[in-house]
Image (tube, rainbow, N blue to C red; front, side):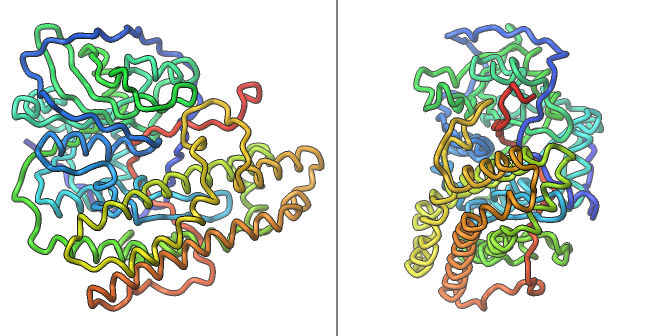
Length: 497
């Protein structure tokens, strides 16, 4: 078995993942069948619990929760977001046309996954296939992480061999898949309106729980079923547990670079579990840049933790938004403004749910640490998160329904104003009061995160986290990342396409 070491690269770290699946043309037709209601397997792991991801972008931790609970570890979706630090992390980027928030669950997933598995003493193998377009692209992004990966293109074992070995050993297998090929009606939206994934697209995590060599089929648990806006809700009809053929699995898996996360039991939790996790969390919250991007701390356009929110708050002004609208992907300025509001609200909403759920999970993960001061300070951020969030933003839809939310209204009406006047500066300035209100909420979140992180560090007897330089304007923070999570929110109406 050959082993590929991923090395460091400065180029990949400046890449920003577009967290909206690009619109494509269905050049590749896929035959979709309704899954059978019954399935008989000779090799199936029974009693694997189902964990619904609840929010777009949370499929990977949801899949991990299913796998870990089947291994006897009582870890919910939000336990994993807390124990990985993802619920207490945020990154921003702001440079010319690139203004973007990235919630912790989307930031450098393999490193926080490695931290989590080390914390619990789990055995983890990460695979991809660099001979595929998606796998090759992902490998370039992963280079800066200094992480290790098995490359199927250099192994005797293939993806289906790893699948069989994992299931035979009693461990469900988490993989990344292209939803275009997943044979369940919830993904008809992808088939009807989009093409298969492109390199750099957004994969979706599912869990393989069984296979049958005779029928050439697999059984999966899909955490994303039920996310569609028109049929949103927990899929209590059981359609999340479905069958697909080896051929369908091959298409879905290959299109996502055969990305594979294999977990199994290891040595168990580290002896200093609580101190290590608590230290990691306060470093993430105060924005210790080394915690996020070791060796890249001085890349000025990164903002991390509290400074991600503070920097974005300071960017809610004419000059920054004007530059963004003028340069953003060379699209219509009104669409650029609407895109900014939509994406900011979407990412803040994702982080709001992750943060709130992680706060609830933390006391039982850190039972011997007095968290009261930390929780008091951290809770101050919640009403400000809520003011900038809306659940419809992270539901799948081709059209965003009208809603009265601060971020949505400000930037969509700003775009409408520009459509009517073609005066970019005037259209932005007309909403200066709303921009100031958004800024105040973001800076309040920053203050709460910094205070909470420092309270936790003091409880541990540690000095406050030190940042790599004080930036007058912390200009966001984009990071190269491998995204495992479906986010399908297209704000432009189909008539505009």
